[in-house]
Length: 336
Image (cartoon, rainbow, N blue to C red; front, top):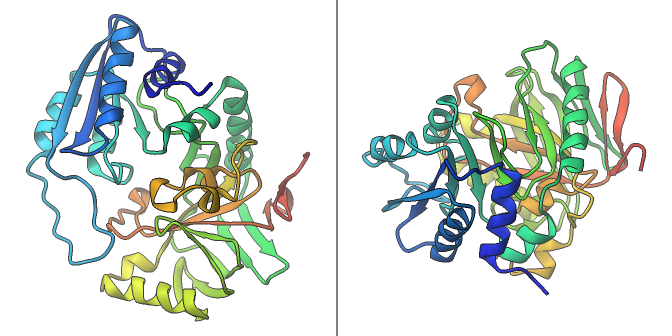
């Protein structure tokens, strides 16, 4: 029998090591996802913790311009969140790429983003075993110098990942350490290659995903990447739509590649957009599908690049190699 949303939040907060002497803060948007707010508060109380709800009128970025940032509520949010030990983000678009997230975790607080439907949260719940797999993949990235992705469809892209200071994102779906951010559910590893070092070609195939458009690619698309930026997009309908999207922002930063990595969650399924109503999903299942190659465009705080335009693009059937040693081969994790 499926668990209630409240029960799921209790399980999640236990993974996050919430204790009775702590306070859980919930950041929400007015009138949005109220059932998540109520479940999070009830779960915190079930564990003996305090709970505080911080509601803003609107924090989500638009899907298309025009866009004008309004930061009037941010200072108050930060002040309230600063008094909490665990901050749960249930906003519609998430504060993943915002200054709010950076400042909350920079102050030593734990922060968790929650966006998927309850049954996805339950099915893809994190675990210590998944965490171990993600951490091992992160060590592979940290020890490498060059990341290369290829495919039979024509993808051949390289990026410089050298140096011990390489920013690596480990996502296993819960936060039990100070200053940690994660997304429930999750199961992937990614890095931010040195800026302007990505070079080559990405060929999207039917079945690859465009997030947050929540749709599958239907026709091949070829993207040329030079010095970390997309310089050409060719192909059929999706190519036209991608060009239109990038051009609509009138911002050169939206053409940049951001992070890249691969999925590690053994339960995540590629078919999620067909099984569920796509707009009910945030897309984390496809980001986490074991053996994908997942890359993104736009925002990169490590390169001082901020833009509200951001795409995540998981690709199937690729080979991902670090210093010529494959970690994913033809869309399957090496060792599986």
